[in-house]
Amino acid sequence: MKEKKFGSKLSRKYRLTIHNENKLKNVLGFYISPLWVILSLFFSFLLVAGVLYLIVVFTPVGSLLPGYMNETDKEELIRSHIRMDSLLNEVDKQERHLANIKALLSGDIVPDSAKNSPQPINAENISLEATPAEEQFAKEWEEREKYNITSQATNIAELQELNLFRPTQGEVLRKYDIQEQHYGVDIAEIPGENILAIHDGTVIMSDYTANDGFTIVIQHRENMASIYRNCHRLLKSVGDKVVAGEAIGTLRNVTDTMSNRRDYLHFELWHRGKPLDPNVYIAF
Image (cartoon, rainbow, N blue to C red; front, side, top):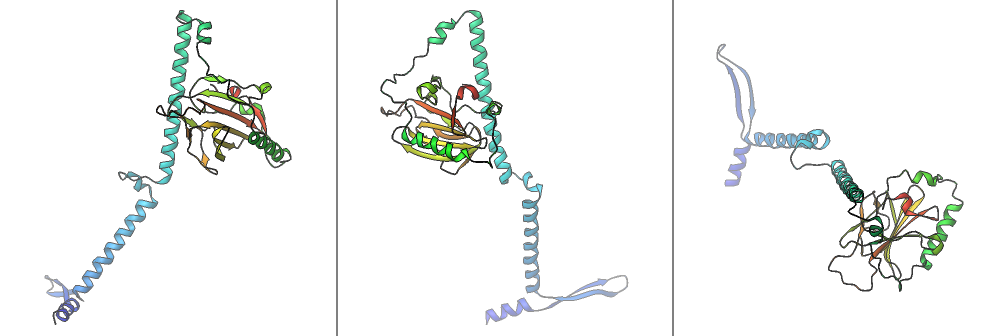
């Protein structure tokens, strides 16, 4: 009985009249019910909420709201942070370079002693010869690119104009020497330092090998490939797109006491199946 009474009250109609007091007559009048008022308010709320949602999502008004950021702005913010970090590294490198020049000019540092001061690691028991996997990779690369008439031939001289990032900080322990089949450079590890992609590209290999530890290979648009061997940990997988200066791996931490690991990063640069001297294209 109570439910019927409540339903009848909701559907009960009331007459709403607008009366003109000066003319003493009704100007407008219509019937309404409590149920009609409730439904009208509900659909009006949905309409206003929908309009506000469309305004926030599809107009620049949403960027004015605190804490709201679209995907484009997020990607641009990440790129800006990467560029800022790279610029800070370049500024720090330039400041240290100027400090060394000032010390040399003032006589505080003797050039010969400064040149011979770094002590290379003992690598007598380390084999730096090309592995079968490396030789197979070079052979496949040469065969694949040998008859590729659709790809644009990149002039090696043009690669020098690219702004290639340094893969990691640290002293170069061993340089590129094609006579000894040493197709890259060995860079001393700085514990906890990241390994950075030298240029935009796509990861085509990310795996562990018995001879070279964790290895990652990046294919770049300029018919160029970069190889990073003896990593401590890999951060990218095959098929991932990377940008210049992005972290693709890490070096060992200070607390890492693995005695069977080499304490340097081996970096190689290849162009159309032929090795390049990284010192020519990257400022170490």
